[in-house]
Length: 327
Image 1 (cartoon, rainbow, N blue to C red):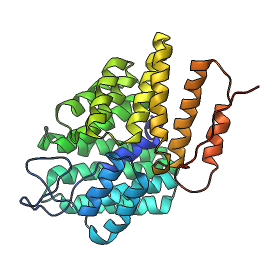
Image 2: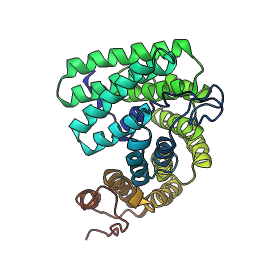
Image 3: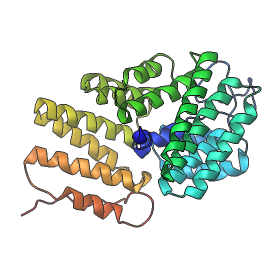
């Protein structure tokens, strides 16, 4: 049970940021990333940050919009949740605790007028607080928070079972649990994402991850391709597609699939300077491993990973190492 918070940071970040939408409902001019009916308004800079992060896969641009949102969207829960996710990546635990607390405060504030979103945000607030407790080695407190996450998620689902945002968040949460808890099944998460969740580029991405983990690689490719049609510039989607192709190639012992996988790894790496360094180093490591399967030449892939990890700055380098063959 202790492993519930040890999911890859990308997925934790996604869960941390799907807290959505604002305190002020303006139906005529509403901007809603998730809904086309019964929409809620969200601040321009928060919306831009969300799309930069999840549609474009551009982390520096998302961070720039978040700095603006601190002034323009002060009452926006989504902005604080995204900030929490960046603080998590930076391992800035004081900032993480601050943004987690703000997310929870706003959730409780909106609950009276918007119980769906209020309960949803409260669930995310508890998830963030549980993450903090876990990082402080208080696994009992983290487990208690996890129980509260499900309590408030279930309440939101009960009020609005077909709500796109609720199903997006719940779908991703179910996928996290299927990876980190024994006897969990990703099929529930896939169903939530497939039937009602939105936006499509995130829902289809989650479904692709679910089918990848189920080792149903043809279905996984189908959905990652759908996500790429909706977000064709996102390097993380090319990374996901490369992973699926590499897994499929390994299962089928098919070198053509390894080559196709490596083409997608290279496409993802072509935008390395808009991704965090730790993501770039992992993509490059998997690219190197796949190249060894293609040409049967030995390389020190871990050394390449360390070289990128030890570079300066937060983001991946524009110039990446050249793969060489060990003597």
